[in-house]
Each structure stands twice: as C-alpha cells, then as structure tokens.
View: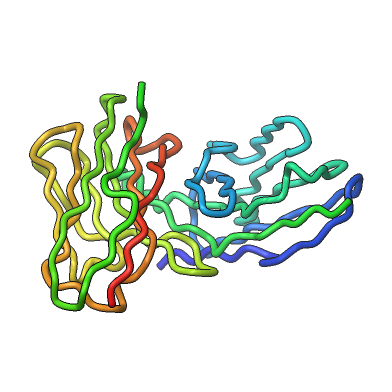
Length: 112
Length: 112
C-alpha cells in the first residue's frame, strides 16, 4: 500500500526566507503532483513531475522529483505573504486509473 | 469553460437521510473522482470512474454509491447519512488519468 508522508505539517516563515517542504512515499511511482489549497477553497494544480530528476519552477516555487529516493521537494524562495496556503503532494499509484495517494498537507504561513 | 462544478455547495442532513451530490465537467475528461477531505487531512478517494458507465471503489467507499451515466456527470449518493460522513467532498476529473486532476469547488456536508 502506497503511503505518502509530508513534512513539516505546519510551517511558519518570515517573508523573504527560503524553505523546503518534503514529500516521501513508500512504493515505486513515476508521477507526482503538487497542489495548493487556500483556506475554504478547492485544490489548484501547481506542478506535475513525470520522471526521475524532473524539476519544475513557477515564480518563487520549485518542485523536484527523485524517484530512486522516493522523494519530492517543494522549495520556496524569498517567501511572500501570498504563498500562505496548504500544499499537498499526491503520488500516482501506477494503476492506469489515475489514482493518487495524497499527503496530509503542509500548512504554510508567511509572516511579514 | 466552467471546468468542474459541484451541486450543492452546502447541505445539512439528519442522520438516516439520503442525498445525491452532482459533479459536472465540461472538459471532455474520461476520468472522474470523488474525494472526501476531513480537517487536517489530505484527500481520501471514495469512488472513481475511468469512463462513461464505469465505476470503481476507492479507499473509503463504505456508505457511498456512485453512477456515471453520462461522460460529463458523476453522481455521489449517500443512502443513509451518518455523522461520520460530515466532511467536505471534492470532485475531480482528468483527461487520461496520467495528468493533473482538476478539482471542483467542493460540497460541505454536515450530518446531524
């Protein structure tokens, strides 16, 4: 059974600082997704990582995937308040049905 | 395009009542999913469908039924609601199951 663990679960940062969120998973998978959820809202796709070594960047966020280590990272550069949200990683179960197992989410608060 | 829509947005039920949640997508996606999200947790898959007329069980299917009579619609039914089904329900869809999922706005359900 695929298990996905995110850490930290809660992260309070100061504006301008850098930090990394980690997503570890327990069984082989070649696809991993990152989503953002604002309070009371739905999930929005951030990144799709489809192969080992994949790196995607959008603004102050950069995601990477190491399938050998079963690890993905979401790096935040020079955080701003607008990045405050909950970030989920989701790991594909390799079933051809598009089923993913979600982590519990990392709630990020960026303070001035 | 409206993307993925869900009806209703909020509902209060008494224990034992039944209801149906409707999910509609206008992106011609083959794959559709129903999730529940409980406080402080990631999403858990209830049921999913890989095409019109097909459905399959996810991680937490007990107490729910689904139907996919039309490609654009995916219905989630609760036959006899229980307080443990109080949650936020999200519908999602994807084109081929190997891409990111697009989420609806969610339905907040409170079972008293």
